[in-house]
Length: 518
Image 1 (cartoon, rainbow, N blue to C red):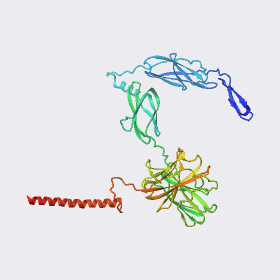
Image 2: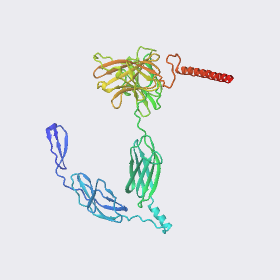
Image 3: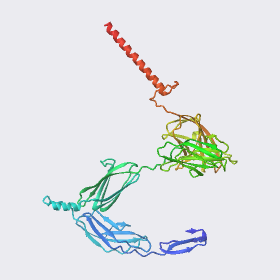
């Protein structure tokens, strides 16, 4: 091992005596050298207790070692049967009414082995005897009460995909645990062949947010099964990692040096609050990147004297859900001297810099527009979306430089104020994204602005988003008609009824003339 300071070289051996070396730069190095030849102490006492006709439980006192005790070796009739770091062992698969002898040895990390413990011998229980029909009811009752397992305590701790069962019984028992989504318990079975009074097991590979039913059965030393508990548990729901939608219709009104901000909260069921953060340099990229103006569930706020020190202020409105997920952010801008003017934030989304000389080579077709987990097909510089479905806008990370950047998309509609949103990097660092909910019907000019702080690269590119109500193929619609689909459908329906009425009258007339001719 080489150390630059002091050029100290230390060789290590199979050793365990401590020596401390001082290095010239003040660093102290502790290295152990010298042979470890001291074995652990003898494990004592050793106790062997028969608990069934096929099982003996062995326990022993803990050993100590001068350096590093590692574990124990257990012998039955002079043959090693187990290596363990515990001080208990259940020896199963034995023969009824048979005597077995046990002893234990301890060993350390360097395989120094202690002296052998005192040997202990014990005999397994005899085979269960089935009471004869002539046995008295009293003796049968007493035997049954002594061999009937009862549940003393039970704890079930479910997680998203697992459930841990821990329980105690009044006597030594084996167990069967069955589970399923119904009382058929057909999804799984755990069987344990070790007799114990304390039991722990784990049910794995479950579905999150699902209710399961279970049946716990104890098996006594005679092999009889007893129902200990029927019950149910529900696994935990999957953690919500989906960010809420952004606020909409955000705008600012300047009054002297103060700013009045309005917005519409998202309709997400788990929406809880917004946080508004301002910065005089540029739009805050996260919820702590600047001065916190407001936090709550209202839809407007008055930021007094916000422009008294700096003439420009950039605001980002972040939406929060119940589990703390944060939206990418909607942005608005305020400028001193724009008194009583609504700034609807097409806004200035560029950062001035005299050193900016390059652009990032990204175009509108690189952006992915996603609804209901489907990537929408772009035609030219246009994409058509469903106005009733949330829209997710993605820009792959691998198209962008590997430095801090701000990406803003601004949507300008013919009958609506411009809205700007930050695209925020996701937790997997695979894309920048923003979520917009229920973009009203209309045609929107979409302008993307990207600024990279490290390389001073910036670019803008444009496209068009057409938001419309998608009509299923089952609906009847005359694309040349001036009326709405419902009006067209109503017209066609009424026309069909009139035509049907004339057809019936004509058939009646033909039938009447046929009778007259006959």
